Image (cartoon, rainbow, N blue to C red; front, side, top):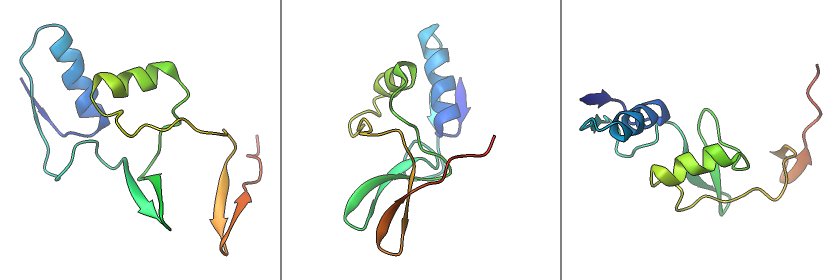
Length: 98
C-alpha cells in the first residue's frame, strides 16, 4: 500500500494500516515528514510553527507522536494560556469570545 503525503494525516493513515499488517510505503514530496507542523528557531528559541501546533497535554496525542517516532523534541507546556509576541514583549492574548 502506498500513502501519498507524509503530513500528520498520511502518517496516521500509514500507522493504522501497519497495525493491521499492511506493508506501507509513505511518499512525501518535501524534505521532512510531518507536513506543515515543525519546530523552528525564532529569536533564539525553538517553537512550534506551521498552520497549527499541537498542545502536548492530551495523552492520546503524545502517545501518537511517540508511536510515530516524532516525539524526540516534544516539550510539555508550562502553561496553557496563549500569548502573543509583540513589540519585543510577550503579551497575554485576550480571551476568546463565545
